[in-house]
Structures are given as structure tokens and as C-alpha cells.
Length: 327
Image (tube, rainbow, N blue to C red; front, side):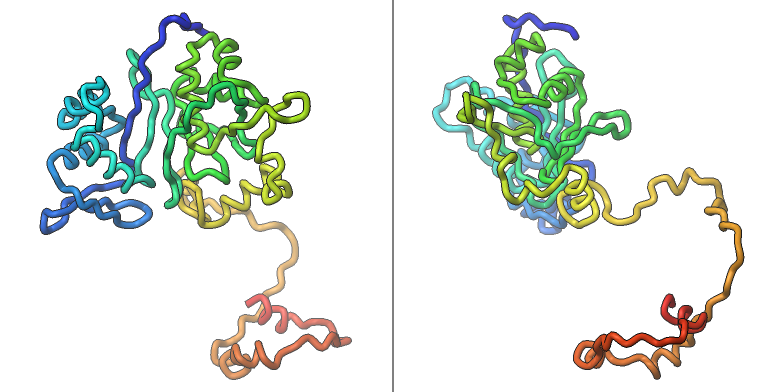
């Protein structure tokens, strides 16, 4: 693991981009913009050149404010302390980002490195991104519901409790995640990895904001770390696998289509089917639709009248009856 001198702290770059499925269009009247997302249409009342150009750049990939020509000067003046209040273009840009909260990918980069170290991608309509205040010496660790997998060559962190997933683009982000199985503080983590504390703290802040990591308190017995997740009565009955299955089989905070999507169907040879098992076969009768219409009770009859008397026929079920039941 390469060790960066702790007295050499690279500048942290906050980067924004639009999700891959987001398309921004100018409304017919030209007085507002419309963002087409997987959650539906989002109206953006600010259709100025500043916002249009900023969103156009964001649609191409992660971009920092310093690389948005229409915002660079005002942002640098504000960050330099020459103004008490943020400049008007910067305020308008932040307001649009809040409106597009569930469609904006938040990335973290470092000076002199190409591309971001990690990206936080929204996966639900309720997704909102915020960076926590300084965590300081408080203990941190991964949630026990967080899982790590590889998708198209990128390491992905996911949790059925989170409204985001995290893409780990750089080894440093992976080292931080790999060191968080147990409780640790940011200073301890920075010393363990041989990295500047501000760099580690920024990565941890993004992981906390994504919902993958927990911030605890050191007020347990003998100063032990205590995390709210461990005593939450709603989470106590769930194992990681059960909650993941529960979340992935329902509409909710997840990425991608629900139900059967058959992602490998185009890689199967044409006509390939599961072979039929050996053994005798028995054709079953499928009833005629007219017969069903004439004999089946209405929904009201089934609800109000039908009941289970608990008596069973001494005769076995016939193949015709079984065929009708399965039909």
C-alpha cells in the first residue's frame, strides 16, 4: 500500500454529475427546464444560461464548480472570503442541485488525480445527499447490512437501508472501506493507512452520507463504542441476507428494474431450453373458458358465502379436476 506523506495533503474536490438516465430539456415556452428521470419529470424554474450550461456539463460526467466557466469566478470569490454571502449564481446553482437531489451523482476527487475516488449514486426517489458535520474522534464502522460486490469492473457498496449506492473508483477508497469492519476513529484509520487525516475524513464523510457507514458514541461500558443500529428494535430481527432479499424483491430503494430481468438471455444460444426430465407423462385437461364462466362463483359469492367446511371427499382427485385446478 503506497503511503502518502502526511504533511502533503491534496485538495479535496467535490464533483457533481447527472445520473446516466437523466435528460434535461428546455420547455416549449423556454421559461423553464424539464429533467426526465426514472422517477418522473422534474421541473426546474431557472432556465438561465448559467443553469443550462452547468447541467449540460454535468451530463457529460463528474465536474467541479471550478470547471464550470459560468460559475468559476463567483465561486472562487466566495470561497476566497472576499464576500460574506455566497454569490447569486452559486446560490441559484445550489438550489437547482437540491431540486434534482435524487438524480445527482455526488463524487469525491483529489487534486492531481484523474477521475473521482468514489461516487455516491442515488437509487430511490427519496435520495438526498448531505455531508455530516465534523465527525472528530467519534467511532465509525460499516453498517452490518452493507455489502460489497463488483459490477462491470467497479466495486460497489450497497445496503437495503440506504437510498444510495457507492462506486469505489480508486484503491484508497477501497482501503478505507476494508478497514472499517470494526469500530475505529478517523485518526486511528489515517495512521493505519498512512494517509493524511483530512483525506480519510473526507472519504468517511461521503460513506456516512451514503448510508453505508455508521457514526457511534464512545459512551458504552468501559468506553466501548455504541452504535444505534445495534439496538434498533426494527432492525434487530433482520439478518443481512433476509433484509437484502426483502429489499431487492420489492419496489423501493434499489437500482435497476424489479422482477425478472434476465440479463444473460442474449448470451444463451438460440433455442436452448432446460431439458425435460425423464419419466412418464400425464396430459392434463384445460377447461373451456365458457365452462369457467358458467360454473365459477362471482367474487362477491367467494368472499361472502364461500367457506371451508373441513370435509374431504373419500374419492381421490381425478386428473380432470387436477388439470382444472392447475389451470
